[in-house]
Structures are given as structure tokens and as C-alpha cells.
Length: 168
Image (cartoon, rainbow, N blue to C red; front, side):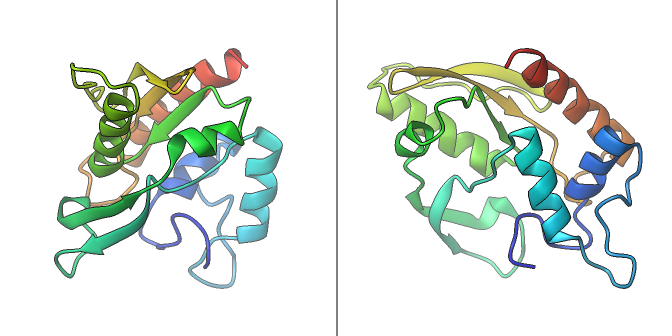
């Protein structure tokens, strides 16, 4: 699947299915262990949800999926990306590496002497990137390696979606 969170054992699309459709299987293809890309794209577009990576080039330092062993070679140009998304009011990260990458970018982009502190998992903070103030939400990882029940992960994501969708 050429899309975000394609791994069958990753629960991102099950979390979204639980929140918006009360059905963790909502985005699954019935005939195989895969997610329905077209259904996801339609849903995300209707909701105004954009997905992107915090780095355009990374180096995997070990042969596993852990963010711990990723080296960001080229971070994404977040100010330029936000320039294309004038209605964007929040950024959501699902991993420690993405959160740290954004906080580092916000620190250096604004030439701050004080480092931007990442929010705790399930929490948020305000970031200034260029001339924009954006809310950064740090959500629990949707990986099953992250030790939290899917229902608890969904509750954290639901709270974030309610906040963001309430304040368009």
C-alpha cells in the first residue's frame, strides 16, 4: 500500500475507525490483510486531515522499525508546507522522533535560545513556525509495540480530534 500506516499490525486506521465509525475494522479490506486506500483518502479529504512525514530523507541505523534508530538526514521544510496549508491549525505526531524533529525545527526556525519542549504523550503545546502559531499534539504511537490498549489510544486521539474539530 503506497500510503501512510500501511503495516497490517499498525493500529492507526483501526483507531480512526473506532473514533469516527465505532468500528475498528471500518477501513479494512474484507478479502485480505490490508487497508482500503481509496476509502481512507476520501475520508481524510472530507475531514480536512493531511498526512506528511517530518523528514524527506532518513537513514535507518538498525534493521528494525523503531524510531530510536532513525537518523533524520533531511527534515521536511515545515514552514513551506504550512504555506501550502493556510487553514492548518494543528500538527499531530505519533512518535518521539517526529515530535523531536518538529520541536528542533521550531527552535531553530525562530532563532530561539530556549529549546521548545516536546509535550507529553497525549498532550499538546504551542509552536511558532515562521509567522504561525500551531498546536502540536503528541499522540500515543499506533504501533502495537507501544504498550497501551487500542481503546485507550483511541480515547487520546478522540480528545485531540474533538479539540481540533471544535476550533476550526
